[in-house]
Length: 488
Image 1: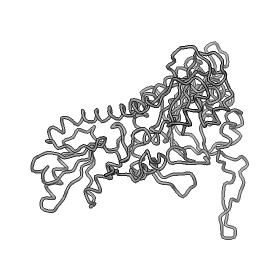
Image 2 (image 1 turned 45 degrees about the vertical axis):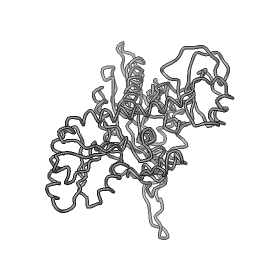
Image 3 (image 1 turned 60 degrees about the vertical axis):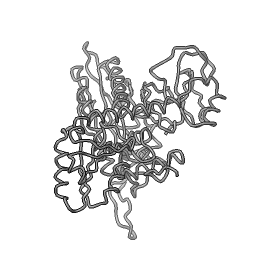
Image 4 (image 1 turned 90 degrees about the vertical axis):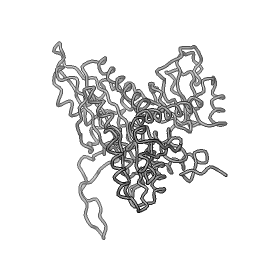
């Protein structure tokens, strides 16, 4: 008999449909009535809140403070940085009227705005405008701010979490006295994202620098963490940008330097979005639903009371005592809903809860616990004291297993033996997707042959082999390695 799974579609059958089935099965989000937008449901938002808490703590440890800036940005402000506005022109949503009136039974825009307002696609210019007011002297530097907010970018093709018209993110913006300080900030935050993606989320991640034609619009340099999904495609997981003095000149972030001269600040920006939840799904989930690393799981343990009538009150008290016995760092939920226990169990399997516990008469009598491990679906019975003493080690094993599985899957899909476009074309047409590590001359700009394959240069990784070779695109001699892949 074929193996039965919680989801009605498997990864091997249809990866795209499987991804949607994981979201629905775990009750993470749903499409809204607004084109391209989604509703992040409570369980999905609880995952985002855990991510926020971890990152926010790290940002503050490094000296950053939170602020909030307008989501409506005058369109003429974007005109001050030509490369930036060109990079976002096709994605901008614009407010052109400020009231509506009823006409022929329908509400229609009434009063045109003198200056149209863009709905925030990113905030370099509007935050830079504030920094220009705040900064007068080198003594006012550095300015290290972050905001948690929403962003709107008008997408033609949308997919929940991965690409939506409106999404949530954090965006850090900093201003510095010198180029060296700003570059140090940029690489520091790049390292923070690498830590978060690989150490906290247990995802695959390759840190590196974007080629010139892939960098953020208006940036001098863009750094990325490229993560491979289970299907071999790349996901840009987080980015950090050294902006030079481009935005400072555009909005006038000037200060009196140590020698009395008027100087432009050097700025950086960096961010991660709710698309990382999509990356988390595609990195760890299986044909039974979501899998979550312990750091961001809303619950580590869910307790399901098995109530059959004769000793329900005692069982409920025992469930409460188990919860109270676990230390505060273990997140526990007792599901007291009047729903069949088996339905509850598989709901929480689909939600990726590391340990789903079922407590009934036998457990009450034995002072024990019975639970299912999410990653293996292995069923375990043990005394309550043993469970209390081993829960930390079991969570550690849970996380190590997630990371090992993910990295082993990705390592099998990395190819470093390709030396020609013909070989690359064969790789991407005759097999599963994956990452190709090949030589790349960073001065190359003609990528039309890659466009034909729907392949992009994902990054120049931080780790380089240093070997000589020919650029796979131009044929020029180079020592530089790059990652080539299809992407989300």
